[in-house]
Length: 378
Image (cartoon, rainbow, N blue to C red; front, side):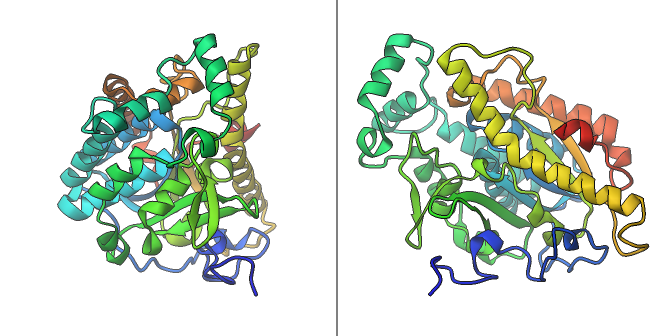
């Protein structure tokens, strides 16, 4: 009997995407991937299809909200598939759900509603607001508070025995998961970390529930593990932030637009415990993305020098909307700041970054990779 309740492939969520056997990591780059059976998200002015890869990063996901808002408003891109972790997964699901409700305008309205709802200024009740305020640690940096927080809250099973998570209520009330699962629409892929196996799980749109989103955003120091079919899951960012490999089979387009909000570089040495912890989190949540970019670059090299033969493979065109500069003044601890004013500032930075990226890059989409992959991972 399989140790995983979902059984063998292709139903195992960690290997649910490729329905055709994948060999040594090379097959996903073939020139003739299966045609997606779903429809793309496309407005009336859409000209070029892309796939979206959305990083998670707590409150910094509001930057990604701004990016999506600007891309949808511009209208020249259509979206074949979306992959994401944690806040990135939530942004993707909220966008697709809103699009199903009301087209591009519905997607933009849905994103704003979601971020307003989960802010400290939103419609949460007093008890939930108090919990979120503590959860998002607006008093972070106070050494006395941090000391007592560690002493009195050794585990979420002690500090949060009822496993309260206001995000669940916000998502359950806004997202029509049944319609989302049944719709002929863009592919959606949500990552989580299987606590038992230590392996990446990627859940497809056709089976998504609010539990899958909660699993994708389950920081184990804050929330109890989310069980799905009896298996515990933690935040997807540990092993896929975001996972790129599902896009090789789920979309025909070669263009992947990565929205990256976790800084790769910080030119300063962390010295305090909190600084060290924050930097470790940033490195950890970028590690597997770096590995996937390295793999894509490796395959591109084999294609370029003819090792893979002629006409059988084509390059993946990766583009990046980078939040590093815009978020430079926001340390990792600010990912826990859930004030509406902060969300709006991050949204505006995301909009500006997306608009600048469109101005500089739009003409190259479909023709070339605009992200220097080697610089990105070395």
